[in-house]
Image (tube, rainbow, N blue to C red; front, side):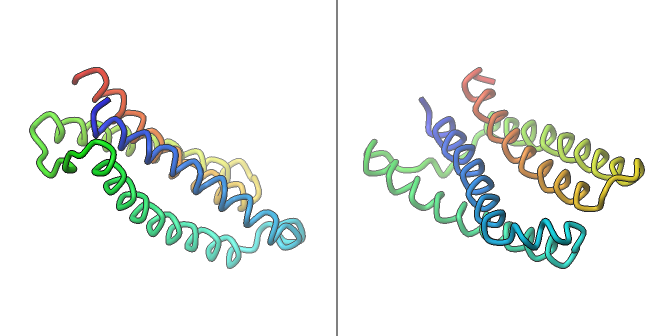
Amino acid sequence: MSFQEKRALVFLSSILLILGGYSLFIYHRYSDTIMSNPNDFVFWGKTFMILVLVSIVANILIQIVFAIVHKIVTKEDVPTRSDERDKLIELKAIQITHWVFIVGFLFSMGSQAMGMQPWVMMVILVGSGFLASCVTEITRFYLYRKGF
């Protein structure tokens, strides 16, 4: 398995763990707040801004740890160069990710057009963002595995 494939799998796992862990933490800690006033935009805004910060910090730490573990286990340096294939795979993954997020955004706005609660929009919006992140890593893994 190539470095890029391993990296995609590690980041996919980290995305799922971060979202799952943070969601459980928020649910257990603030379940009374969520149930009593699910349309509190201040709560949702703070929750999702903290989630973004936690995700950024966790991904940076995971990237560092992954590079160190990869160096120790394989005794190879982390590839610093990217060729045309790497750039093409990255562009393809970004293109698919954008479409996934746009569809999620349209669904979140559609939920409001259908008269659903505002918290539904927030959950769909954040869910589509994390789904887009997962699709990015799955696309990268698939295209590197395929030999694109």
